Every structure is written in structure tokens, then in C-alpha cells.
Image (tube, rainbow, N blue to C red; front, side, top):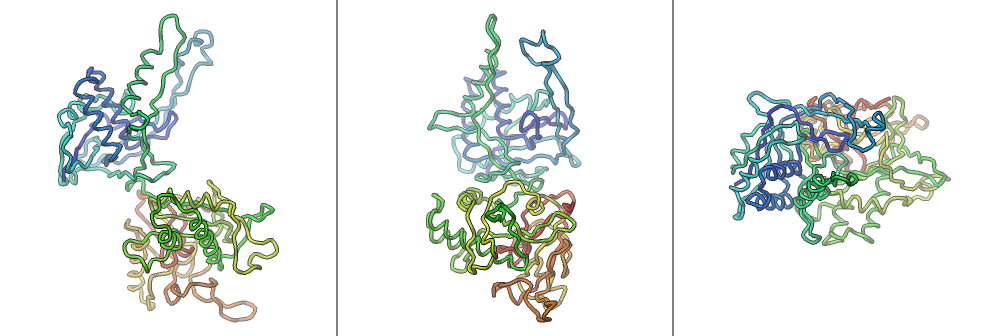
Length: 510
């Protein structure tokens, strides 16, 4: 395979680019920032209307169709420094003290391995392309003098590379995930919209022109336009792993109070939310679904046996209340988690479930107050215990292993390894298992318990599905590398789509 490789080498091991004026730091440097630096370099050489123009237009279209793979050194955020400087304002001379703005400096420090250079590589797969202006791209890259702030001196070059060449490059691989949206991890990418006639290159030229025309003799100072034509793409790596998209709902009664539902019946809540989701999606599916019936049956309902290929489905996860040392573990919230890349479909579903009342099969299921209503929340302290990033995770509800271990530790390990693989956890980790959770008031992993009044053994969890019986139940603690922060939600085992095997990040108890 053939690749276009643009390599930027910094003169220092620091980078000062920010995602916004006050932070947070941007790492790795975005494709938009690389493109802007190349445009600025071409302008310094007066090559905008010459050979560089065609190369920059080609690169802009390439970024829109195929955001590049980025290979960059490991990084850590340096100490922030806030400086105060005068504003460029006409009233500064009369009111000097009131015209000073905070200017934060938040460096990103590159953590280099032995024999590693402070370099960032941008890579595009160009297999089969015949119109690439390689010589002009090389000249445009060599015009680059800075990447980030004006103090981030750098130089660049472009060349053709093979897969073997790329495998030798040192650094963290940052992979673009188009179609995924997150609050953090979004990097700007140059783009072009031919329908409305806007593109990043023209917009950058316009902004530069407004900066040149800002001050004119005898006229008021004019505003400088900021770049506004770009796309955003989520980038994931071992330093910023991609967690499953999710939405959280509170269970609220009509008077606004929380519904308190026992943990041993959590599968009832999962079933009720799943039933409503199926009804809503049959009535109003997403527009881009080709076969609505199959999509609802497979993706929303989770029926996998009748369909070949990779299975992807939604998970309906009641959340026991944790986060405090003596939390009662009562279910007051429910989460819907989608497979990676399912952000759009999840948002379509959750918008139609918000403020929808649950419909239990048993009319007395919720007592005199009646069934609760799903109320979507975006920031919740309890949900954060399940969705944070951490290197140590423990189960709140028992993990149902994909088989029976016959009380043999070696077989238990094999079943745990299999459960981790089936749940999509590929990062190496150590684990411990037992019958009790590390979280206080969690129900144990024993299948039966004895009623204190009648002495009769009963299922701890009511109405457990037949396919989950006859398997080994355990509580797990997973420990990953200290430098590896695994994002939640993490759900493991055969019952991971209905609330069993729910893990929480340790260290959030207050």
C-alpha cells in the first residue's frame, strides 16, 4: 500500500496549540492546524496563486474525504502560566488598568522515547490515486515554519511511504472516527462544501485579509474574522480510548421524586425500557436505516441468532446508586449504551424516549405512585461512576460468565478471558474474582439466597432469563496499566445487555 506522509519536526519538545482561547490543550496538532500552517507558509513565499494553490486544494479535498492517521509522541500537560497584557484598543491610553486581558499559556510537553524525535506524522492512504501533485505538496510542506503558536517553530516535509515504513514510526497512533461525536477529543479538519461554495482555503484567505485591513488611517478599528469553515472529527488512541456512546435517564414519579427500584429486580427495568424502545423505533426509525424490521429486531431488540455477521446491539443498563460510602444500591437511573459509532442512532432513540412513562406488565409493579417517567440527564454524579475513565474497575452487579467453571480456577480464568474478549476489552489487564463486590450493598454473586423470614431459598435476581441460568456468576475487579485510562461504560459477560456485569470506576466513593 502507498501512503502520503507529511512529517512536522519541532525545534523544541513543547507545543502550545489550544482547542479554545482558554484551553484545553490540543493534542495531537489537528489536520486543520497543519493545513493552516501550510497556507501561511505559502503566503509568506507568495505562492498562493502559483503551484501551492493546486496542492492545497487537493490536500483540502483529501482531508474531507479521508481524515489522516496521526502518529505523535506521548504527551503530558505542562504547568499553565497566565500573563496579562494590554488590549489593542483605542481606549487603552485613557483607561490602562481596565484594558488588560488574561493570556493563558498551557504547554503540551512531548514525552519522547529513546532515539525518538519531536515529530508528528500525518498519513493518507493514496492507493489507486493518480492525480496527486506530489512535487507541489512537497514544496507546500517545506514552506511551513511554525505549527501551533508563533513560538512553536517547526519545519516539515512530504514523501511517499509504504506500510513497512509506517510501522517503523515511533509514537502513539491516533485514528479518525468519522460519525462519532464526543465532548472531548474532537479535532478540526479542513473541508469544502461545493453546494454552498465554501471551503477552508478561501475562508483562511478571507480571515487573513480582514487582519490586514483591521487598521486604516482615519477609520475605526475593524473586527478580524476568525476561521469558521472546518469539520470536526473524533480521534481515538491508546491515550484517549473511545468509550461507548450512552444516554442516562432518571426514573421520576409524577411528583418529581425519584423512583426507588430494588437491585434484585433490575432486569425488569431493562425489559421495560427495551420494550418502549422497540415500539418507538418501529413507529419512527432513523432515516438512514435500509431495512427497518431487521434493524429493530437485531439492533434494538438484540436478536442475533437469525442474522449472520458481526452482531451489534443496544444495551439497557439499570444503574444501582453508588458513589457514596453507604449508598443503598437502589436503582434510580437507567442507561442506554450503543456500540461504538452508534451516536446518531442513539440520539435519535433517546430523543423519543425522553419524558416517556414506563409500561410494566404488572399494574402493581410500582405501588401506589404508579410507573415512573424517563427523564434524560446529561451530567449526573452517579452515572459518572460508570462512565469515567480509570485504570481500575470493579463490578457492581455480578458478571455472568459464558459457561460453567465446574469450580476449577483454570476454567474460570478461561471463561473470564472469553468474557472480556466478547465484551470488546482488548487491553491487557490483571483481574481478581470472588463472590462479593467491592462496592458496599451490592448483591453477591451467589445464585440463591435464603429468605430471613421463611427460610426458603430464592433467586437473588428475579426473572433471570433462561439463557443466563446454569452459568457461573462472579464479581470481578480489573486492573489496567497505570498509564492506560479505560473509559466507561464497561459491561462484561453474558448478561451485559440487560444490566448484569456492570462495572464502575474505583475511587469515586465520597
